[in-house]
View 1: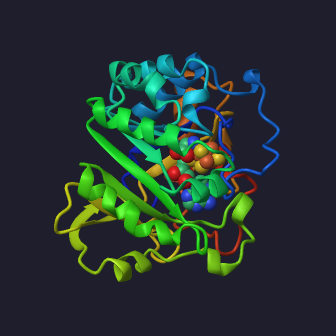
View 2: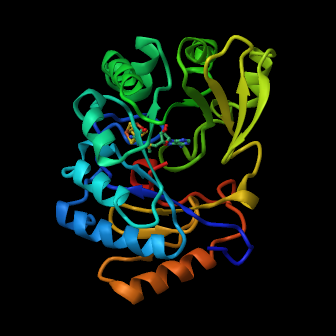
Amino acid sequence: MLDQFKRDVHYLRLSVTDKCNLRCIYCMPESGVARLRHEDILSVEEIADVVQACSACGINKVRITGGEPLVRRGIIEICKRVAGTKGISEVCLTTNGILMPKFADELKTAGVNRINISLDSLRHATYNEITRDNALDEALIGLRVALETDFDAIKVNAVLIGGVNDDDILDLLDLTRKYKLDVRFIELMPIGECADWASSRFVSAQNILKLAPDLKEAGTDGVSKQYMLPDGLGTVGLIRPISSHFCPTCNRIRITAEGKLKPCLHSVDEINLRGLHGADLERVIRDAIYGKPKKHKFMESSPPRNMNEIGG
Ligand code: SAM
Ligand code: SF4
């Protein structure tokens, strides 16, 4: 449906847990977070109701995220219910990839079309520094298994941190020479754990174009500007929430694991959906979509949540 600024909002990012098997330095505190109790997060039934109500309000694409969605109990049933909802034509899942070998076939059978795997470095020391874990080999096996499973598309998400993994850019680009996948560089956003980091850690996506001048423009894909290397099998996407405002074309809403609807990633406002049913649930979602703010304000204020709670 259209919001008050005539943007067509049809994409839901649904967080199914705040738990994670990694602790990325920009996303989670080293000590972890006080985890929500199972009864505090939406049950599979509640998720199914919320997605159905969102679909009635014009949502046709759902991204399942977290925390790490593959650690959520009942994740396959959740995917099945979401994919089986009338009006939902695309189901994507964003994961750190570590549990992909265990779940790939079941995700595909459940109706998940697309997978994004977050991989900020291909070097052990840097991956360990960012994720605070020694799991690069597992993540790479996860990527391989995802590529071997017949999903419609595989993307690799990389968040660049100045002085940490900005020297990984060429190696990450090289993945698009080897595999038919989309490597997306996402500018680090000053939210939660990294809200007060030094400005030198926030690397503009422009640096990628400087390092790889042979990247040729290849259109857009949602909020991502697409490029290709001359000998690339896959594509390269630049997502620039910092250096280029994409609010005028924003098409998404978010729902946290506890059932709070966030009309904008940076909204401090959260609309509780828990306990609502049928026409009431649909009305609250419709009002929230209509009232989506015109643009984000994270340069002025940061929402009081870490990304593991919001879902990226
Ligand atoms: N655990 C899964 C994963 O890492 O793919 C899904 C949840 S994670 C919060 C979703 C995405 O958000 C990841 O690609 C992560 O790199 C990104 N992310 C987390 N914090 C971020 C930040 N401050 N700025 C930009 N992207 C961020
Ligand atoms: Fe976990 Fe994803 Fe956050 Fe890393 S970015 S700590 S993998 S939720």
